Image (cartoon, rainbow, N blue to C red; front, side, top):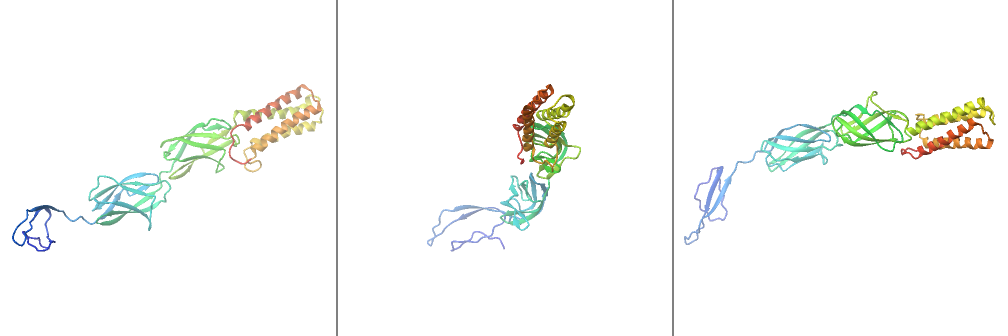
Length: 358
């Protein structure tokens, strides 16, 4: 189309003109039938080049890890006036992944911020850039984050039944976004150990640990869960549950009570046949093993019940001693031991327990 020449005369209120690129000053004069002219109205017209068609060449970076917010740049042409960036997973819009347009865009580069939630599906996303000239798309890949590694646990042990949390330090790599720490017994979560992450960095986790009184003694593996997945400590890195002071006292007193029953028929006169004392001592040992033996079958989840049985057993022996009238010095020692045993078992019953049945 050729450019318009001026001046132009027209009887129509609408006038079509073609102007070259640049700034133009137009003056409008109205002349009536008798030849009178109005004062000129000045109009400034800026003629700009046609914006280029929106076309995307690539995005840098073209992938990101779950749980991250990434600053990226979309390259191409016709991007200056971009109004939105939509995200698609396959044919459906992905409303969880967010892309925000940052300042500083040009026709050739569009800076964006990409927010990838922790639990979104991995795989390819399609970013659709919208401008007044049209739309174009570019592919972006969501990949798993760096999997955490557990290198050391300090301290490597803790006692059951302690009322105050144990301050644990788990050292490793890629631990910053850890959201759960748990301990495993035979590959399953140990509900008797509760954890709370107090502080997290890439190199270590500060964790508060509460060990219930009914936790089984022995080693545990540690598992850390991050947005990138789960990681479990190697066999050489573990956390060991040990008896607390109350439990050590219960074990010691139970063994002493058992020994007194075994020895009584041979070193002093007794009102009952020796077999009764031997069975009494054996009963103490069986109940002690059942109470604290780490097992998943025979006495699993029965710690509370077995504790009351042992308390009742000790009380029964005291009642039988009083009925029989055995006033030998060794018998008095045995009853003192059993009274102390009952007291410690009661103290243990007041210590924090897990939510496990039994």
